Length: 240
Image (cartoon, rainbow, N blue to C red; front, side, top):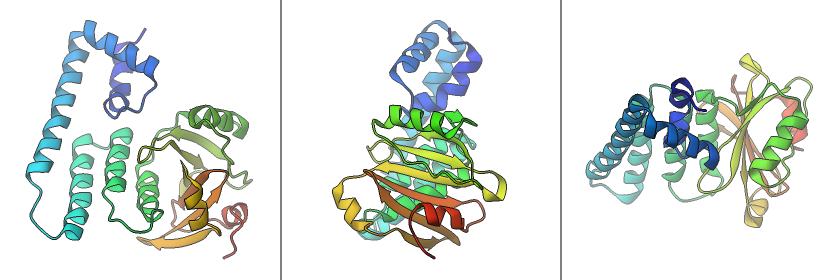
């Protein structure tokens, strides 16, 4: 049975629709019988609906390219303030930024999204587990095998299932402290494999972001200290 504490902890995931159907049903059932949690759910839903309406009405008249850039930054900042630093809601803001990126290189928006995820320190669905346990979790969630970086200096710390732009994806956490690395893995089609015939390194906001393709997944990685570990370069078959 779901209690009020569990409901409050799960509410951000429920609002962002980042929760399994059976867990969603349990949470909604609890909200129907618990007056306090039901009220909390209605208030949060109304707040989100209001923010969406206001953002549409407040869109300034400007050239299309500039308008997209303003919307991307404006919505990200608004959602970040409202959520008070909640991991899943910050992730939702990052997804908004992802969706509103100007058109161009289809892989470029993954850079900003990867940096956002790294800065927000997302909670893990599977944490401090052996790599085989994490791989099994990701295989179940993504419906395909994921090649995890097996790096002695950067042990697998956990993973979080994270749909991105309508595609299945996950954030994989490695290491910790200044050595912490976050890897965003998103399912990709064959056209992406051509874009990443070779791994590439991009510097954005003072951070190195390493991207590579393997087995139907595109990986985008950045580290807490802004510099990609050499061991990750070797795993991705990239030479500095």
